[in-house]
Structure formats: structure tokens, C-alpha cells
Amino acid sequence: MAEYDYDLFVIGAGSGGTRAARVSASYGAKVAVAEEYRVGGTCVIRGCVPKKLLVYGSHFSEELEDGKNFGWTWENAKFDWTKLRDHVLKDVDRLNNAYTDTLKNHGVEIILERAELAGPHEIKLAGGKTVTAKYILIAVGAWPAVADFPGSGLMSTSNEMFHLEALPESIIIAGGGYIANEFAGIFNGLGSDVTVVNRSDIILRGYDESVRDRLIQISLAKGISYKFNCTFDRIEKRDDGALDVYMDGKKDPVRTDIVLAATGRRPKVDNLGLEKAGVATNDKNAIIVDDYSRTNVENIYAVGDVTNRVQLTPIAIREGQAFADTVFGDNPRTVDYDNIPSAVFSQPPIASVGLTESEARKQYGNIKIYSSDFRAMRNVFADRAERSLYKMIVEHPTEKILGLHMIGPDAPEILQAAAVAVKAGLTKQAFDDTVALHPSMSEELVLLK
Ligand code: NDP
Image 1 (cartoon, rainbow, N blue to C red):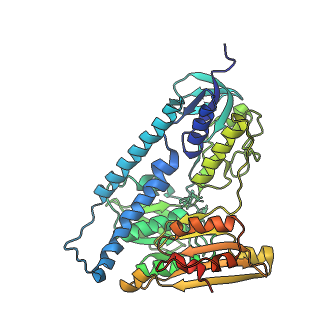
Image 2 (image 1 turned 30 degrees about the vertical axis):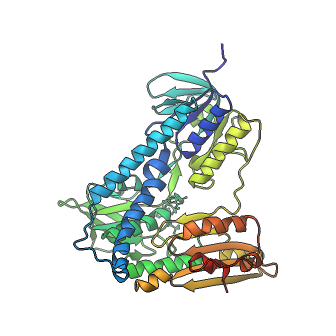
Image 3 (image 1 turned 135 degrees about the vertical axis):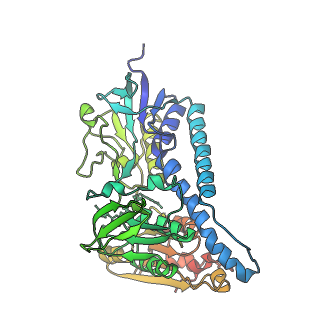
């Protein structure tokens, strides 16, 4: 008889857990994965995917407006929130099924129950059963962090945004990061009155200053309001169901339909039984792992947001893959965290890879900046004032590219390809040597001055 019930037990069927389970099974391991909610995890069920669909849905308002100069008229154009919401949720169901099928087709046992550690090799299922595994992988992700102040429980999180009964007339968004700016764009495009409230005067900390400034300029022009260096005192529910939000010590509240808490996500380790197995965490509740995603307990690993290395889906997937290759594929592998491209699906979107100008100055001292500040042809024709900005940071005098930052239509689609060049360590000259693809927005990348 086998010593353990499973070779590998994965807790959490999100991006990292699913990849690790599927690849480990393909190497011949007997694998089970426990999921307390739905297979697919945050990205598929309540994150990247449904968010991007809402961004598309929201952006149609601009497309309709811009269509006029292209000869189109739409009589009585109307937006129906429930139609968009339900169609998005249907697509989430489709992906949930696809993820489930993939796991099943690879022979992975799916246990739709909450699982907790009961020891280094033991896992307790919510149904009461305890199972054992030679290796355990923790891939439970992260959860919205909600500040604690009077009435903070009246705030919603991104989880609920995909299920709203109705489109809010007004929304206050707490935070100035990814989720705040993406939902600000979504609700503004759909016609809600949007106010972003952040504790500092910086949005999208970690992104290049120039593209952040450009997003604020464009967002203000679109009617999004910002309150900076502002704190919440309390929130009260009114008789009509709306919320009174008291901020910055002011006596009078601001009335709003929804307050969205978008103030970061914390590793979801509560009641996971980590102490029973002796798994160590850091001061941010993140599971501490080495380069191979191994915890301080020899047979227990962790990947994805629960380790709080880089909270991005493609990173969780890479960590899951590297884990499976290392432990079951006889091919020890680590993840390369240098030059990770990332994007904010604001309107317009931001995309970035490598160092920001201030990071590059600090690290390299001698740098040079090339940029293009332009209005996309389509925007000119549509009388849309919105300008795009592409910015390249190079080391001087080698001209090696240190960072590339873009804000403008389709910036993430364009930057993914350019990120290959940055990752490969190319110089500005390599871009100059490449003939422009005309007329396109991306040609600005090889014409930077
Ligand atoms: P972010 O870390 O992007 O931003 C958090 C924001 O909340 C910051 O503006 C920060 O302010 C503020 N904040 C942090 N803590 C507090 C607090 N205690 N009280 C008040 N304000 C606070 O977090 P998000 O919630 O927007 O997103 C979580 C993570 O999910 C992101 O880090 C990202 O990795 C991932 N994500 C990625 C997306 C993508 O790839 N497109 C999309 C959505 C999420 P300040 O900076 O001033 O300190």
C-alpha cells in the first residue's frame, strides 16, 4: 500500500494551483486539488478575465461617440448593465468548466471543499475527512484587504463588482492602485459618477511618473474625480440604501451608492492550519518560500499570491510550472522575476516593463530618455483630445534599454512584443534599425526621439 493517499495535494485551484496540479499529474503523480469556491481562482472567477470584459463593455461608450466622425449614427443607444453582467458571468461559467475539464482530463481529482493543513503531510477537508500527501502545495491566493474604521463593513470589494444588481449612479473608490484605476475607468465609461480617494497623492505606485500623470490628466478630462491625501472617518447607511461617507474630518458627508475598497490584497492564510504543519509566514502574512517555492517545511511548497512575491497571474502560473518541473519532472527550475511586463487596464491602458525613470536614475545614474507624445490617428479623426505617451529609458552611453512605459490605446497589446526586446537586453539602436509599420501606433516605438 502507498504510504500516502496522494503524491501531491494542492490547496486552491487558481492559476498557480491548476498549472502545478495538471503538470505534476502529466509527470505521473497522483494529484488532488481542493477548491472551496470555484475552479479557476481569482483571475478567472472574479479578477482579470471578467474585469477585462467589463472594460471592453464600458469602452463602447467612447466607440459610439467616436463613430460619429466615421459616418456612423446610433439612434437611442442604450446600455443595459444586467445584460453585460450576465453575459460576463456566463463566460466565467464557461472558463470554470474549461479549467475543470483540463484538470479532469489530466487525471487530477477535484475536491470541491475547503481544505486546511492538519500536519506536514495531513490535510483536513471541510467534510471532516483527513487525507495524506507526500507533497503539499499551498496556492490559496490573496483576498481584498479592507481597512478597519467605523462603517468600513459597508464597503464592497472587487469580488462584488461582478454581481451588482444595478449600475451605481455614483461610486467612491478607496485606493489608487490597479483595481481602483481599472474600476474607475469601467464605471466612468458606463456613466457612473466616479471619485477615487487615496491616502497619498500617488496613483499606481511603482509605475513611471510620466504615464501616471498622463492617466490622471486624461481621467480628469473624462470626469473622474480624485481626492488625494484623504482618509475615511466613517461610513453610514442611509434610509434610502445609499451611503454617507465622512472623510478628512469634514462635518458633511458625501452621498454615494457604493464605496469600493481597492486598497491591496493580503495572502489568504487565515485558518489554513499553517501552525499545525509549522509553515512560517512573514509580517505581511505571506508564506515564506525559497527560490524553488519551498517553505520551511521540507515537503510543503507555496506559489502565487499567497507568497506575495509578485501578485500577477502569469507569475503564479510560472511558479506552478516550475514547482511541478522541479518536484515531479526531475528538472529543477526557478522563476526569473526580472523585466516582468505588466499592464493596468485603465482607459486608456498603461503598459510597462523594466525600470521607471526614477528607479533607473537611482540604479544607473547616467541615463537617457526617449519619448513620443502623440495623438493616435483615430483620436485625431474622432476629435478626441486624448494623447498617448511612449517613453524609453536607456543606459548612457551603451543605450541598453532599461525600461519601456506606455499609455495609450492598446498599449498592453503593443508592449508585450516590445517586452521581448527589453528582456533580450537590446539597445535603442535595435529599435531604430527596425522599419516602422505604417500607419500604426506601434511605429512610434521605432521613432522615439
Ligand atoms: P494596489 O497595491 O495596486 O494598490 C493599493 C492602493 O491602496 C494604493 O493606492 C495604496 O496607497 C492604497 N492602500 C494600501 N493600503 C492602504 C490602507 N491600509 N489604507 C488606505 N489605502 C491603502 O492594490 P489593488 O487592491 O489595486 O490590487 C491588488 C493587487 O492585485 C495588485 O497589487 C496587483 O498585483 C493585482 N492586480 C493586477 C491587475 C493587473 O495586472 N492589471 C489588476 C488588478 C489587480 P499608496 O500607494 O498611496 O500607499
